[in-house]
Amino acid sequence: MSTSIDQAFVKQFQAEVHEAYQRQGSRLRPTVRTKSEIRGASTVFQKVGRGTAASKSRNGIVPVMNLDHTTVECFLQDHYAGDWIDRFDELKTNVDERAVVAQAGAFALGRKTDELIIAAMDASANEAIGTNAGETDNDGMTRNKVLLAFQALGANDVPDDGGRFAVVGWKQWSELLAIPEFANADYVGPDALPWKGTTQAKQWLGAMWMPHSGLTKVGALRYCYFYHKTAIGHAAASEVVTDVTWHGDRAASFVNSMMSQGASLIDGQGVVRMRAKE
Image 1 (cartoon, one colour):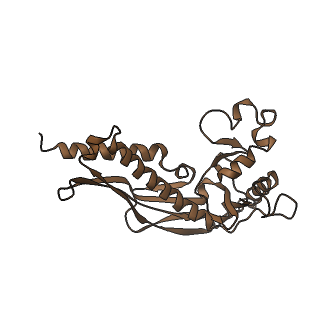
Image 2: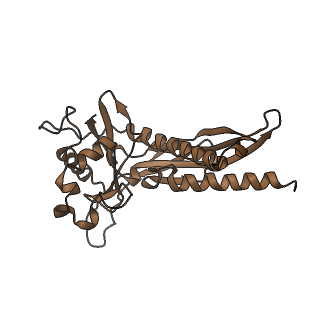
Image 3: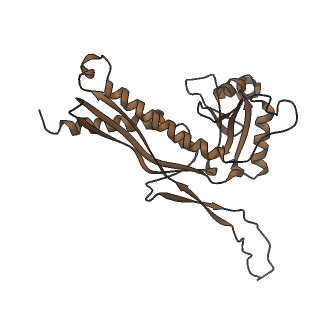
C-alpha cells in the first residue's frame, strides 16, 4: 500500500468538509459584509458618516463634506468541531462514515458562523415597536411590525439598493405565510410565492426574507431582524480547514474541522429588531 494513502484520505476529507460548509453550512454569511484572509487577532471595518451637499459662490471654494470616519474592531474567535472514526466501524456500516462526519463538522461550524452574526445583530438597540394592536410584544410576527421595521430603515436613510435582508424564526415564517401581502399571488405575483420550490426564501418589500432556527429567544420573545448587508461585518482569518490524525492506541482517526472567524455590528441604524412572541 502506498505510504501516501493517508494524505489522500486527508485531502478528500477536507474537500468534503469545505464543500458541505459552502453548500449548507452558513445561511447568514452571504447576507453580511465579509472580509477574508485576515492576519492578526482582529480586523477593522470602516464606518463612514453622512455627507452634506452645499452650494458655493461663483469662483468660490468648493465646500468640504467633512465626513465622519470611524472604525469598528472585529475580534476573531477560534472554533473546532472534531470526532472519532473507528477503523472497523467503516467496515460494519453501509454508510460513508467519512462523509457523515465531514458534513456534521461543516454544519456545526456553519451554525457557529451564524451564531457570531446573530450575536452581532443582537447588539443593535434599534427596535420596531409601536402602540397599536399587532405591534406589541404580546403578538407574533404581524404586518404592522414588518412595516414599522421597513419604515425605520427608510427613516434612517438605509439604502434600498438590493442589499436589504430579513431573517425570522420558523414560527414567524409560518405567521408571515398567513399575511396575504406576503404569500398571496394577487399581491406578489405567481413568481414570488414562498410556496414554490424547495428554497425557503423570497423577495418582499425590497428585501430577501428567510427563516432561521438559531435566532435569539429571550423568554417568550424571538428576536427577528430587518437589516442592510453593510450594517454587519463578518471576518475570517481561516476558512474551514480539516486535520485527520491516526491514533494507533485507539485504532481510529480523529477528524478535526476548525475555523477562525468573528462578527461585529458596524451600524446599529441599519439593523432593526422585530420582537415576536413565540
